[in-house]
Amino acid sequence: MIMTAPQAEPTPGNIKVTRSDWINLALETLISDGIESVRVLSLGQKLGVSRSSFYWYFESRQDLLDQLLKHWHDTNTTAIVERARRPSETIIMGVMNVFECWADERLFDPRLDFAVREWARRSDDVRRMIDQADDERLTAIRDMYRRHGYDDEDAFIRARVLYYMQIGYYVLDLKEPVEARVSHLAAYLRSFTGQEPTDADVAHFMRFIAAR
Image 1 (cartoon, rainbow, N blue to C red):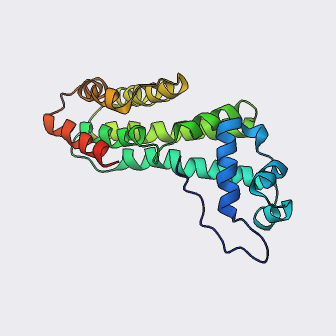
Image 2 (cartoon, one colour; image 1 turned 30 degrees about the vertical axis):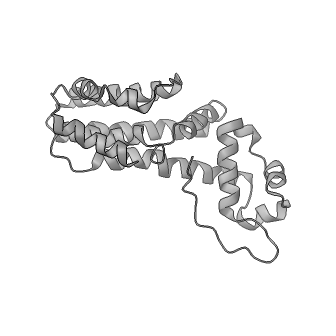
């Protein structure tokens, strides 16, 4: 997984790691072992530095956790919202813009999303953030449908079907290769839009897949 962590600051004195190093390791630990394993002491041991390095960059463990949540929102939620809001000549092109998030984990990291959802089982505050993010994502997708002439209820339901299907796909941990999935692209587009995609539509998205 490629992280888009904050820029590293110059290391002062004899501090051996950067703020980004702490955040990247914390993200990796969150994904692999869960939020309870994101501890200052254990992270410092893995990085080979003392806790004083941590407190150079962060006020507290909670400060680090807040940065993990910010990273999650700034990547996963922002990617979906930005692509749903992109201008598109047709709803099929609009849906394919959103599909880019499902096809490229550099845009939307499903393992990180799942880890934060697991975290939300232990934290009411994180649960509220998950709910807010889901609403933000769904609203952007609904508005995309509305811009293309779908009435309010139809846009709302189609947005839910598109978004919840994909989240469920991740939760079920289906191991379908991207190549197998995109082989059904035209059928997915028909299902999500009620319109018939052209060969040019399918070719457009296949070029995106090939360029990843």
